[in-house]
Picture 1: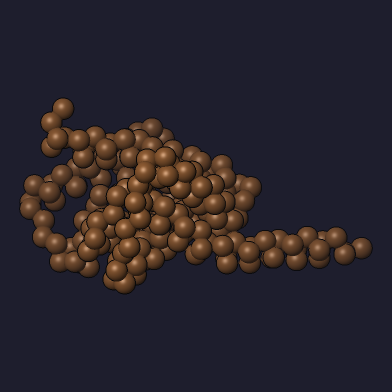
Picture 2: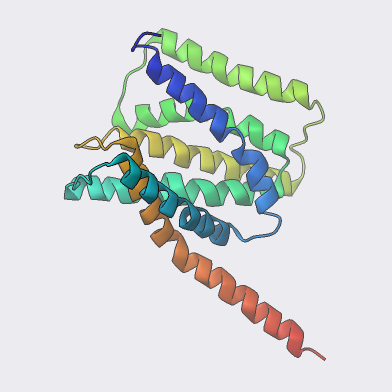
Length: 221
């Protein structure tokens, strides 16, 4: 395989791994609040990334202030925001509907790149994006012809999934704006740590709310 095709292989493997997020989010959201599940996710992933980085002998580049700001925005949008919105949306809508919404990521990324960073697109790219989005919709609708967007819960869930897609698109675009490109493993460590810091405060509030609710139920005659 030529070096030219290796990035495409990496992207394909990444999308195959990410394809399970809808199903997992649907299962986890049924038993855990979104910020709590997000904090647990990063709390489990960070030690593994650190051990892997130590095993690989990687170094720790020091980002500049500009890059630190972008990393915080990436963690807030693509790490915490994406996970929380996906779980909240998956709780309200079906996995089939969520898959349809997730298939719009290439289109949303291109639109945000055009609006935020004035990136131009060739007509072939526009055609490819339209075909990609149409293909995702066609496959999803064919897999479940009984999709319904009529209920209020489903509409709210679909909207949350679209916001999650926008967060993921912003995450991708911000990574290209780093002045000092970071190795993937180092970047994952930074984003896990920042995501954990951002998710912990609302996770604590969720647990306090659950605790207060439990105490109230227990004190009732």
